[in-house]
Amino acid sequence: MSIRSFIARPTEAGYQGIYVLRDGMPSNHLPLLLAAYQHTFARDLDSMTRHLIDDVSICWKELGTDLLDDAPKDLVVALTGGDSWPSTQPSNLTAPDGSPPRRITAEAGATGDAEWGYVLHPDGIEVISLYEQTRGPVVGWATDPRTPFSDHPAMWPVTTVGTAPKTFTAVPAPSSPVTPATPRPSRR
Image (cartoon, rainbow, N blue to C red; front, side):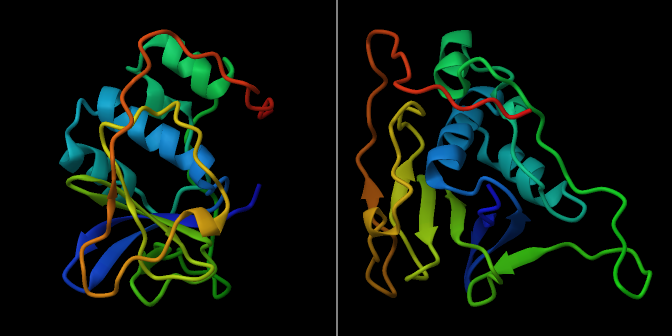
């Protein structure tokens, strides 16, 4: 799906980040980002932020299962149904005037046509539904990536302007393996 989003870091003015052109719903991004933080990046938020925001030349076309490289196999299967696909960036792009393209960035007050935003805070991921709001609640980093996240904007309530975003209580990992109710459809 072409649901545009962005991944950003907090700044004094709000946030600054990079666009992701596809699959930007919470049910897709949150499991990947939580599992990447917990396993692939070994809870190193700076390293994860550099990879997802700073090391991108233009933008992300989509985030892929390479973000789950170091996650347990049962978690990867639960999140992807066993499918795999790489994170990709657009290639062979030029601007209308023939010049190289510029980075497609997002910041507070300038999010373009993005529908969702994910701000990587030290305590978790702020989820912003840009249909109606400029801030959102934070999903704590300890939240189990298998948590069923809603894609409905009303489920990501507006937080009070000028205050820190509300942090959801972390959902503990299940004690027994969780089988996904419906595996993700095949990507290719």
